[in-house]
Amino acid sequence: MSKCGCDAVGGHVLMTPRLHPTPRPSSLSLPWKKLRSKTRLKITVADATGNSRGSFTWALNQTVGGLLLPRRESSEEKVRSKKRVFFLDVNPLCYTGSTPSLHSFGHWVSLFFQQVSLSDPVIAVIDGERCNEYRQKLLPSYKAHRRKFSKQLPSQRFSSVSAGRSRQVVRDVLRKCNVPVLKIEGCEADDVVATLVGQVLQRGYRVVIASPDKDFKQLISEEVQIVMPMPEFGRWSFYTLKHYIAQYNCDPCSDLSLRCIMGDEVDGVPGIQHVAPGFGRKTALKLLKKHGSLENLLNAAAVRTVGRQYAQDALTKYADFLRRNYEILSLRRDVDVQLEEEWLFDRDSRNDSVVLSNFFKLLGETQKLTNQNTSHSSDG
Image (cartoon, rainbow, N blue to C red):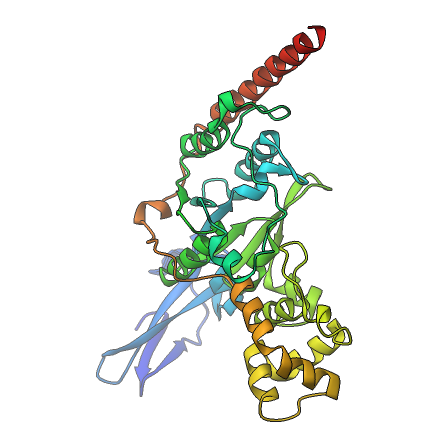
């Protein structure tokens, strides 16, 4: 028997340390000297016949008699041990406020590569052509006021001569930095990301979505985080499930239901208060905490009274209105796109500095040329 042995009895693991003084670590068969606080030990559980009954992992971080002893890993530690895959939502990064800006794209992508993703796999996603048609058929006001990212390269004055160059430049920068760029015709980037997130999680990875878009909050979980550009601080900031619960005091699934009730002015989706003025956020939160989701709430309201009369009347009268909002605001998970194995490889970042330097040089030359043309036009 070894100095610290394991016996299998009735499907349990029994730790049987000897009671005499512990020998020096160098005399053990395991390399205890090299074990650190982050070291993990996988232990297999066997039954009395020696057949495996599964395994579990221990993290080694405590010492007794000079030896590191195991403790069971928490669920949070297990999640952290998984490899990360980043999704980069490109379109919002190409704006400063509501103004299209390639400088904004370059700034945030540069910080993202240097401070956030490093060599982790990154998958970039861009809105496809006619991406809003599906939702605009349900609600014509959906994103109707948003300015599309210009297809021209100059960031101030645009001419039809350079049409299409801006989008191509963005794709070229990302591809030269070894980032695959996805664009699915007729689909919003949000839906493509939501579909691929499920596929990545099935492979055993955890996900980080790089975007300022609040729509992605409905995907947040222990294994899905968001990292947001923060212009006021000039950096990216991680946003996790803990942050979400602290901010909203509800589950991410309830948040989507809440947005369907209250609407989304930014996306042009009206809330129930437009048709039932007495129905406010406080009422919506109270009902959702009790029923869990919008669909549960509507189903309950259809057969019994769920709240005060004004709320009951609104939920029964405008059920179709609210279900339409849900169809518009919920992210689709059924886009026809399949995860490629090569997208999960560590990203080769050796070209980053050269590619981004050339990109900013191009922007500077283009801006200089634009200013000269503007000056000549004024002189004429």
